[in-house]
Length: 121
Image (tube, rainbow, N blue to C red; front, side, top):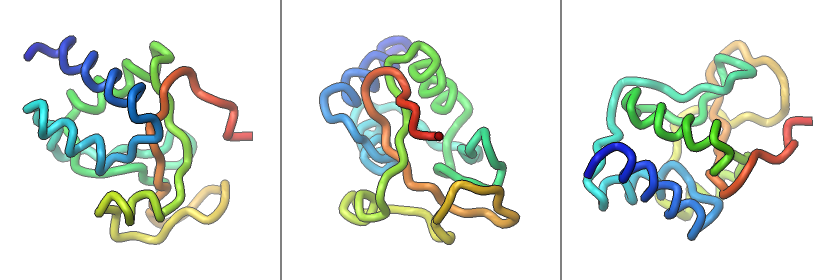
């Protein structure tokens, strides 16, 4: 499967399921045979100490960023419970408020279909 096919399959999966966690997305990528694993962390553009997820390849991050830039998907904050139910999460304190942190904190997010909503304000 080529890169564009993988990108299309990821988009279709998010559009079909909506509110897809990183755990759920990783399972899907395994199912379609796409190796997302790598040494990169996915951080908030607003604060380097707000971590969305860890352990992805640059290629996987680039695919997701392209889908976001093309306004086919967007990220939204999620409750920890979503990740608990999906069977995963990060072992670090969770973001409690919108501010600059001095130590790494996890912000659980989900991928949703369509353009980004204005949830940051």
